[in-house]
Length: 362
Image (tube, rainbow, N blue to C red):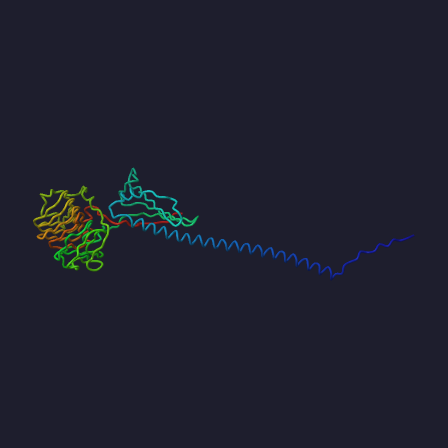
């Protein structure tokens, strides 16, 4: 009987198996480490890209916000002084909602101040201004503001003229320093110093033998060049007293009982006349006598003070025409914020636009 002998399998030494296991584990660990490192690198790269993009967007958004604020300031500054915003709505209503990058668009609309609402007419001296400022896509910032009028009427000079000056003698003074300073101005005044005279850019101002006779802000002579407000709406005021030029009274209101006086024609004053409040002439005011007035004196056809005439104004003088002022006589126009504010109670006077409230729209 034969017996087959089967050889037993050959076993690897334990040291070889241990080395093999260690090598395999190291390889797996290395692969995992490489995978983790690659993932971390990708994450860091994406984070860096996102951070750079976010920083760029934040920078562009900040620039767009400053642009929106500047656009609001420019839009408000461009609004002419007035009593309502109806003319502004007619001229600038609407606007592009999608301005190009680096630009802004202004949209003006009424605030719904009457029933039924008329979007073309402002009755409460309030409008809404919406500014859209665009940066590089997709950046866009929107700013909405309620715009009203300043409380103080706009008179940049003691004499605010819509035309030039033909004569200004050394006996006639224009004083923009608010308060009663050797002028007989009965209103004390507590406002800022104005120019002695304000005239438009192209208006004529004669050479002065005595520059100190035009006193106020900016040295002597104190002359500023500003676009004047429009006082012609005063002619249509329902609260006005309307005497005929030939029957002009010697008293046109007092400080105790001021009045709004409107004369639809040229006015000649050859006697002694005093008044308080507002005196508006749609024609030329010619003074050969004496006029003493507290408040706002306005003449759409200009003011002429002859060699025999004397004019004293405590408050403000406004005149248009060619020339707007011809002062060959004597007198003084002295600015007084108190007298102007006091006169504004009788009828609305033009004031500059200002921002009342603002918010960001998202």
